Image (cartoon, rainbow, N blue to C red; front, side):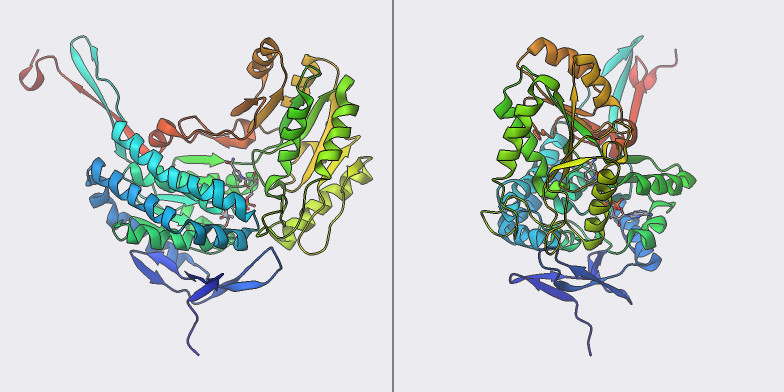
Length: 488
Ligand code: NAD
């Protein structure tokens, strides 16, 4: 029997092999890819080993000099062609992603996949404008330039697979680096489609490589490789620690985008309808969003009314098949993730928490949208990231207490503040420890802005010039006052 190298999702054919040096490469072994929607097996994916990771890094190394020397205009043209390819195949990418990771089809169609194309266009355009004005030191001219760093390993999670991958792939390629992308094993399919799209767009062989497999099996081989010049990782804190240890051997620079336990602060002067809208949004992607404001901190005087309105609004959400237009909350990614979520809730309830809504599993891979109250600040449910549709509510009596509770975890990814008082907003945002703070809004993310986390939520920032700074070796060239003939 010949091995099957493709699978089909809603009529879309996906190659299940790695993409190395411009060719499809199989592995001796495979792993199952399962849809969270109904637990069906979508197919068998090539299961990488050190052999394929070495081959991918070698391909990236071989392709690097030519890609780094390719003009900025040509690199930008190819990135725009990739964006065109994403737009052309938008519907296919959307249904494959939804089937693979369970996030809403309508979000993939309307928001996520257009944003994937935008990621390429944005960094293509930024590259063409990337500049630093020369400056003078005692008559000498300083010229700052961005030299591409080299082969870059990009490791991504399953909750927003193509979106998060292209936040990294686009700036890395724009900067002139070559890439080995390792998608998460629970949702690898759109990375394979991206390889096809990039090849069709004319990206030279070896510039983008995709290696699939379990992080626990191939992660170390990738992150300790001496030919790798950058590692960018989005995922969990324990994996980040492991990667940092492995990268230490070669002092490979790291960008780490990690988890969070972000607060939503609702002051008594807030527009409560708006605050409730923001609160209910935290169930998006079944709570599998790193930025989610999972801790509601509500001023005591409005807590009862806020809770009443929240429960009413949350009760209107439809949970079910993420391919249906009416669905608001889909499944969680994997039985193991569901078990983890349920464990957090059970332990919280045993410790005295009360489930205002939810608090239990549903049929299949679905977890009931949950709100827990009566939770202690130092409890596991308040301190640890659940990564499911589980939110907590605590109250505060004044601004100081609100800020103290908000900052009192080991994370610092984001924070959201609901208030009608601009002066309060200014005071509070200044004191919050977070990479992104939203005031009376949520999830607005411009690629020009620095994005990342403080404390255990990450190391470094992505976006705009911060991405180029990361993927490049910055060089300052100082030229003598008289140029080439000065001896003084
Ligand atoms: P994870 O850390 O388990 O896995 C992420 C990736 O790392 C996967 O591709 C996995 O295969 C790989 N990996 C696992 N072990 C590895 C190793 N030893 N070496 C190298 N790679 C390895 O995370 P996850 O469960 O897939 O994702 C959820 C986490 O990601 C949450 O904590 C979430 O908050 C975080 N996240 C952060 C952001 C952000 O921008 N800050 C965005 C999305 C998700």
